[in-house]
Amino acid sequence: MRFRGRTRREPEPAAAPVPPQPGGPPPVLVIDALGRKCPIPIIMLAERIREVPVGQIVAVLADDPAAHTDVPAWCRMKSQEFVWEETLARGGWGFHIRRMY
Image (cartoon, rainbow, N blue to C red; front, side, top):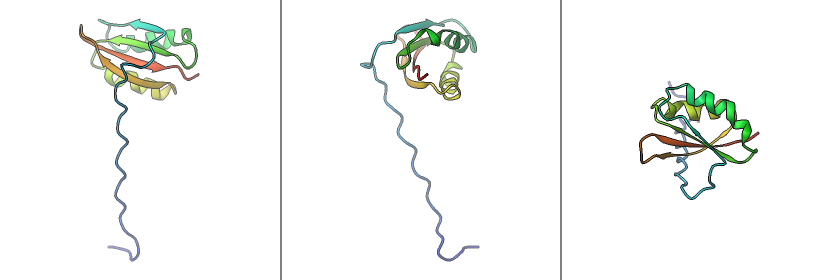
């Protein structure tokens, strides 16, 4: 049943993801969690992010595939900014997070 005067709105397209920024600011702290299974990289990040000044970048190096979803989810839950992700030449990824508070 359709109502007069009402039309179905098309959903707005999602915003394009931010492209990687390899020329961005270097991380102040690098947490090496290569070879560790999740949630260890997240635990290491949560313990050490307070060492980084507000507004600065921390990088987490991880090779567990679960880190692809866990690190951005942790950033959303903790109101930290997930800046970008890079693929490491030796395998794994570098996740760059900006400390917001």
